[in-house]
Length: 415
Image 1: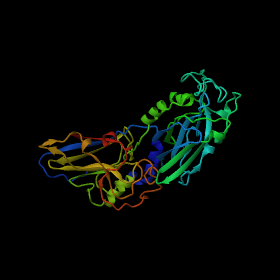
Image 2: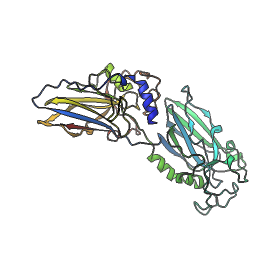
Image 3: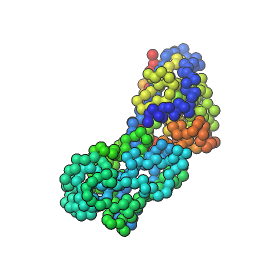
Image 4: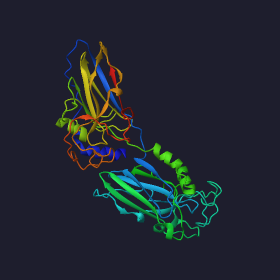
């Protein structure tokens, strides 16, 4: 995901390769002066998935719906147990299903044809609806004989038993609610099937093309998938997916000023700030940082990477800087009026608590990490709908957006 996102982002902001960092400033106020180094580190925790959730116990004739946000390049996966079995579950292919086609059109309608019945390969199969070690009849969880096999479609398993057609047990539909929101519905239609069966509590996950799938064909099922497929217990896999799901974002090349403001709260963004906040293009500013530490050329910083810029300042000087949160339309993290001396002592240490997440007010916001007008997914620079607002603190980012301290760490060193 990192490599593809880097290429896409650089393609959208070719200016990265045309400009270089500048250390010019206009500090001249005080008699004391010193050299300062500012380091901006991306501290996002890497995640395997974008979003996840659970489904409940679905009896014949009942259904359950869940909603989620997703953008181009996102896939949907799910797993729910065929209760009248030893270790069978319904789900899409191992990577899930793409939620948009190559033209950017959202997937909608009856998608049951994309669902398969899978054998987790963890417990020896018995005749469906009859086996003593199947959930409705077993004396306790995990009581059947171990199979020590791998995940396979049931059509590739030669156990001599007959299984119902997928469409005779489960129906899955997908609705596009607009923007980045979808609603999936799982319906139990087994009332007229050869087997009448509940569908057990399961899980769903939204993931990128290069993220870890729920399962891999011909590989051993995870413990969490085994518990779903054998006993309808989704607690382990849900906990694992929740731990590994969430927003992860690069930060883009940014700008800084000494005794001038990169941005002004309550005023319309300048053209330079708009380009920085929407497309990660800082070329409209005189002082920029655009080369990750240790890199040979310009680019965004991913988790564990950092920018560093250096300047000379005098007593009374203040620092202003901003860097784009790439998985957004026009959000940036930054600060104004960072005093570089305090009673003659140079400012040093961690200043992350001085930062805020700002909205440039230039482009209509989409769900962070999913919007198709955000740099990793947009067709070109400056493609989102105009917002015509002013620069302000972003106060409605959403619960999936981490706290600033969980996204970035900024330190100042005085030499």
